[in-house]
Image (cartoon, rainbow, N blue to C red; front, side, top):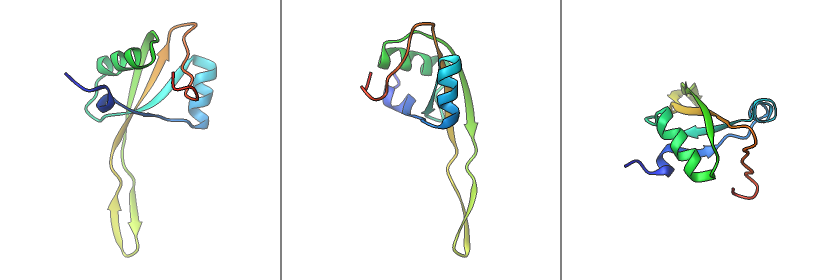
Length: 96
């Protein structure tokens, strides 16, 4: 059994995610690298008590950055676009 906190790590609040929330009722979350769409859907429904109609995932490759004279690489991470059913919403300010 996978823990919910290993699947959904945090919501991503950006301008792009705000537009998706307003236009498509889609919320964006940072999720675990090994989480699949079924686990993400189940975790969101159990955590927030909403009905999910679709999940799209993206693996974001870490950037190569310079640290003084040395080069390093940021970690890869995964985000999920979660579309909710009509009439459902998540309010992050209240924690529900």
